[in-house]
Amino acid sequence: MFFLSHFCSFFFTSCTTSSPYNRGSLSDAMDKAEDDHEGSRRVPNDRDEPSRGRDSRDDDRYTQDTTSPQDEAVYYSDPFVGEVYLLFRGGNSWGGAPYFNSLFDGEVLIGGREDSLEVLLFAGIKAVIAKESSEIYDSVDDGVLILRAGIEGRYYPFPDLQFMSPYLLAQAGGIYMYWSFKNPLEAGGDLITSDSVGGMMLGVGAGVNLIDKGGFRAGVSCIPETHFFYSETQQGFQNDVFDLYGNIRWAVDVGLRM
Image 1 (cartoon, rainbow, N blue to C red):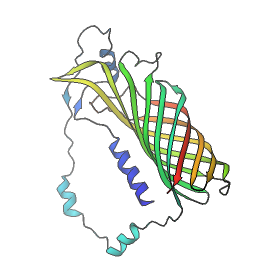
Image 2: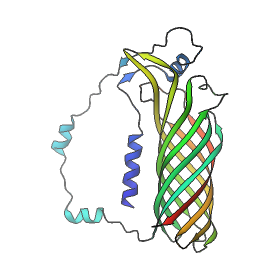
Image 3: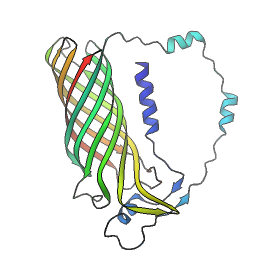
Image 4: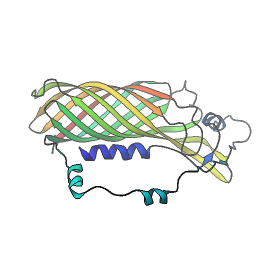
C-alpha cells in the first residue's frame, strides 16, 4: 500500500490554504458580501511579512542521498497480496450542524482486502447549501462544494460471509471547501468573487455488504463525520467563521473486484 500513503500525504498538503495577503477576518468579509450591507465592500489588502527561513539551496547543499539501490528496492516493495476492489459510493447526510444542509455526495474508492482487513483510498465531492439559520446564509451564493480524499480502513468480523457481511470502518482525509460570495468584495484593485478553505475530516461508522460474491459487491453504510477547517482562507481572510462541521452520512456502494 505504498501508493495509498503517498497519495494521502500529497492531498493533505495540497488542502492547506494560505495567501500572501492579510485581508482581515472572514466574518467581516461575510458581512460585507450581504445584499443589505450598507457602505463599502472594501476589505484590507495588506501584504504578509516575508518569512526568514533558511534558503532552500542550503538544504540542497547539506542533504545527501544515502539510499542504496538495495534500500530503494525494499522501500518500494508492496507486500499486499489480497483482493483489489474498485467501488463507487453515493448518498446524502442529515444533521449537518451548524452551517449546511447536504444535497448529495459521491466518491470513488479503490483498495485491497486481505482476510478481515481492508484499506481503501477514496476521493469525491460533497454538495451542500447554507442553512437559513446559519450566519453565512445571506453571504454565500448558491451551493457550496467540498472536495475530499483520504484513506479508509474496514474490519470484517466474519470475512467469509458472502451475504449480509457486517463491517466497522474508520476514515481520515483532507477537504477543500469552495464558495461564492453573494456580492463581490474589493481588495486593492481586485474583485474577490469567491474563496475557499482547506481542512481535514474524520469519520467512524459501520456498514454491511449485502452481497460480496463472484467479484461483485453491493452494500450500505452509516458514517458520522466531523470536518475541521484551517485558520486562513485562500484569499487571505482569517477564518473565524468555519470551525467544526458535523453530519451523519448514509451511503450505498457498489463495485467489482479487479
